[in-house]
Length: 449
Image (tube, rainbow, N blue to C red; front, top):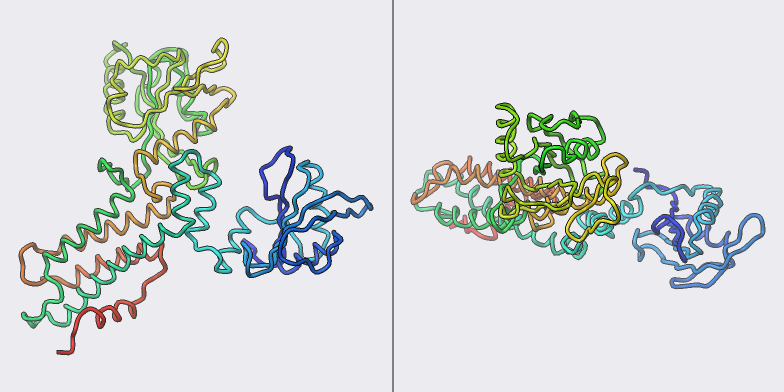
């Protein structure tokens, strides 16, 4: 992503509106303001002025000026508030781009400049994207944790504890031949690592102890035969992956594909989406019976259930509501519904024209987050992956700690696991160098006696 020069872009949602914002940031932002308004050397604050077109026409506008580095991007920044007519906004941008050195901002470039100019941490920048894409209170709360730095503080605390334990373990390597020097007792080390691991697991797993996924969490599409499941599966994926037929029992297996939700919902990542055979009171034949049994097994192991019923009645003969999992009720074949459907308990979707498929994708992302974790790691895949790797590293270290022993039998192997865990958390907090670990040795354990 280019970060030089001056950038400009529309900073408000697309479409007609009473007011819209055009944001300008960079070394030539002041030149842009002075050449297109009656303001000379604008001071920080709000100004009432007029934007002047090359044609001689002017329009009233409000301008907010921020001197760098005291701005969002850390650069000189101007925000123009004008009438929210899309055609007018493009004309303003076209005139701005005629100024040498001014170009259209790429997606996320304002926040990227804020990060590069130390106005935002990487986690806070991710929080901006998460807040923009938030649907529901949980996503907003997760974004707030990133933006206010509280999530970063937690990651730093975890890394500090890991670095301290690593320092104690590594200091013990130098004294393996001296039985009276034990920097930390194995049982104490195991207890502290267990407590730390439990905190990390709680961050990417739910309170009920949901399994931490090494791969993508799974959402299954289930329902009666001919409920439109395979058509919905294909539409969500954007490709003809499953065979669609009016004949009941066409799906004879569990068909899984990766559904990338990131494009539609930034921060949502990807999931494993599975199309299942229809669940009926009886089977057509032995193959259909096996397919239904497989479908019931996959429903039990899934993280989220997408329950399809074109009638909208959702008769729970399979006991789906008692499984304790997020359920998304989808009234399929919305093009065949007479009148308006009640969407207070379901989402009406038409797989043929994509009606409300975007709404369904957001619901899937929220449901998967509810099931697989309440913390911010559930929303930002990078955080989830790093914390998962830290848990793995701690687990490897604990495998070499013998309960009840006087000292560590293999401190080098314990240290290796802790180093892997610390490196993983370093992706979130910034790398902790060997000098930092050495400093902790001298600060916490007296090696000079």
